[in-house]
Length: 290
Length: 284
Image (cartoon, rainbow over all chains, first blue to last red; front, side, top):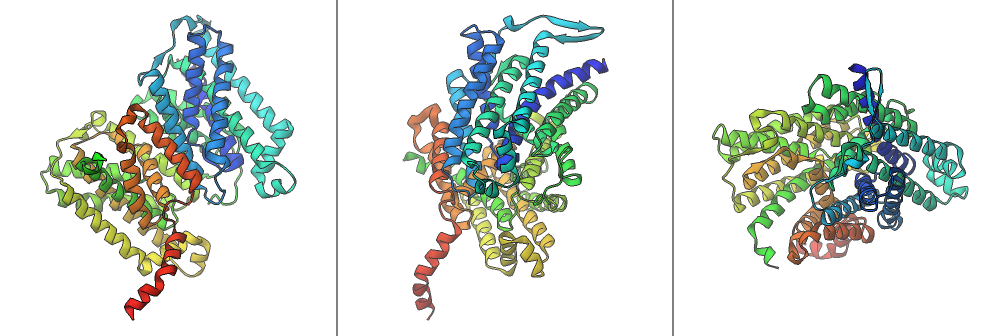
């Protein structure tokens, strides 16, 4: 029973990780908060749902479509909320993303109605049983996708040229510009990449929960924001592990304590972390934090 | 333009003015806190319980709940003070979420179903409170306390070097902001007749932050920004469901065109410079 809960927690956590990585890419590297990330995630869910249900495509195609759709959203986001706003006013892009989030969630509810859209049961793929453990194939597929995406992101950040640019920008944006890195290009790529990742997470979570609703974005978005901070902000791997940990903790709280307080757990943890270990579980201390 | 004559809209304007001034008191001292929704909720529930369950007079209930919320704000200020910038913002988002989950789980105040039965506000009463709080903010701005807070806003390290007790000042700003938010929440609860925990989510804080930044993070900016942003979405009824989309677009446009806000500090200062000869002529 406990092992089953642990497994469910890991599966839930992998979804949080995917969204949280998007935040830590944006905040860690650009020092910007993108409050529309949750809504981009929701758009990914809807695009994926449309492709899977109305166009009868397999899961792989719909995940790719969700990522592309959300990536496009990220591009529009970059143009409208970041590109033309002067850097001296850090609050302005933050609030522009709030405006963007309003537009996305309300457009989605206009197009699809305010009620959640259900994923059809055809996606049910049967299940796998190992001893007394019970995993549905759908969940397993989601988990594999999530891990795969995380590995890809990790490789991009750690091994490629653009990843090196990203890490340089995170270290010191002014110096990076001085040595010839195109910060705007980096900003654009990060926003598109993190949005695409969020979009893929959107359809995966949607399939797991069996539904997508226009206002799902804010709940998961905020929770992932907390996960990013707990994990140590700049550290992409920190967000991955913390997402898994939070997933497990939440499932255990529901199973052994009470489901009423589950949405508060992550925030209590967040405040504890901020007070006693502000660099996060996995991060290293940074200047300007305290 | 019929919307300009609707009392409900003006009630919203009044309540939003109070809440935005609460956030302004935090920003004035350089604290990027988003806890205003939590304190608003606390004030709303406290004053509602006081008037409905204990049959207290509304103004008395507001004062008591403001004092209690101020106490909570001061208590929470001590841990919060260790955090700066975005970290404080994210921690206070957590505070709002924790309060919301708490409100949902206390059956005495209705839990998820909400709490109702409040009455007794009127527009004049509401605006009396608005004017009172505006006077308070204006008084603080033009006092030694206000200048000291301003110094922290400019540069905390320098303020501390000059011998200012920054901890004390920040705690004061937190407490004052919490008290003002509680009054806003109490008036909101009694004007709406009904409150539920989801009314005090992080969206409320973000909306208020929006008013403040749109205005330009000054008192005059609050007075300009809040009415515009509160009335605007109601002003074009033909939009129907597109209303919030339109609102979002306006926001993005405003932030692109005027990221410093409508009435920023520089603007006020330059106006003062331009017309100072008039002022001095009058005093002479």
